[in-house]
Image (cartoon, rainbow, N blue to C red; front, side):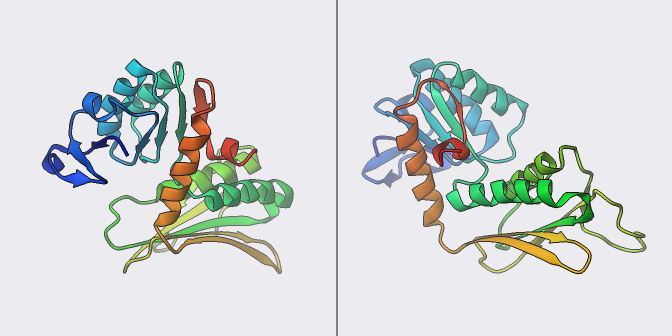
Length: 226
């Protein structure tokens, strides 16, 4: 670790032997690759600083706005970049399995996604749930409508709807289950995170992967050889 970047309130702290700064340019001065888990607003200035020096970036920041998306696209023109809502290799595999399952089972199966996280999480649904929604839509080859929870007299479930449900409580790191429900049978595909270390391991593996790649935008799927 050669640099540490955080919000101004954390400036001056020492992490892994380096002093935290709130200035992106000084933080990346000696970097070969940057790993980012922050905030969409912070990502914009970081991506621009990395673009100026063509430094690869691995980002797991979620809920990106248009400015952050553009900043990453601009970076990818001069350096390799990987963005993923979840750095877990297992979540990527789950998304690929979900896409194939929806494609092969067809419209006869209803899809419901349930995600569970700790009681401090501030957004819902999770970035990983959104990734799974994309996988369902890719398998169905259409933009299936979403239903976020149900309450009251909602009527019969329409065909093609994707139900999305967020559970919050305790210290759950992150559980995601995709329910595929047919007539007389159902399939449940689940990923459970039991340690936050898995996100660090995935990010470090992604960083090593980018160091030998040409400029462009990469995904966890590329990392797994997909």
